Picture 1 (cartoon, rainbow, N blue to C red):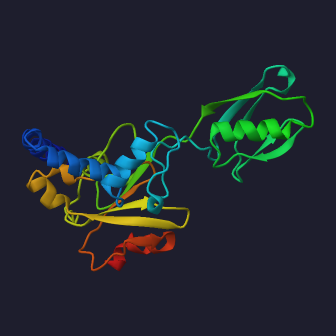
Picture 2 (cartoon, rainbow, N blue to C red):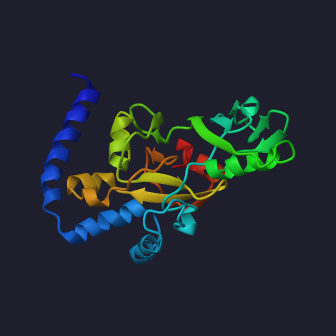
Picture 3 (spheres, rainbow, N blue to C red):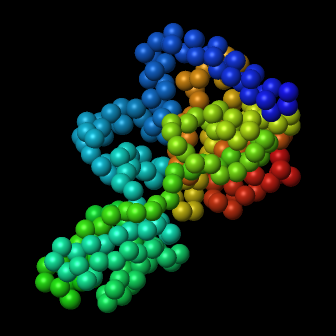
Length: 257
């Protein structure tokens, strides 16, 4: 039996034992899990107030420190493919790919920025672009191909890399998807990096060793699209809560630990 298989079996047995304990948790523990799902920062009371103000609404505001929205609509990225169809002018129907610079080239109407727009906003931009060509242009936009949710795992794991985020996944599960810890892993100081904006990342330090040993699965953080999990080789002397992208590169360099 390979070392990887042995590690998978050991973790599976531990998670089975933890599962029995998890079902015995009180409602207070369930509340703690809710807090972990909502992000690194932000009060639960604030989250409940936002939900009450906009129950189930799309694009409701979330924690501004995380740069997120509670119910975000998908926003276009480079390489996404959209289909534009016109009700009364089918000759303008077209399929467009968002270019690396964030723009698309509309037939006869020229360049229009698409990146970071949701489909409704992009549809409005298309109608405005054709307002000089068509009287009251009515355009429908459909997303044909899009950037799939993903997470990245690096450092002392069996298979570092980028993985599709197909379902609700925790940091401990993400590590196992990436092949589990190596013998050199410092699994008491796993770092979860989350995007705040284009230049800033927020970090959270997780003691997976203690959490799994004590079956405290409610303390495990849930991975969001774009998150990066890093498993260091040695003990981290210090890590800031907020980091710029270049600084994250330094942390992920093993020589810095």
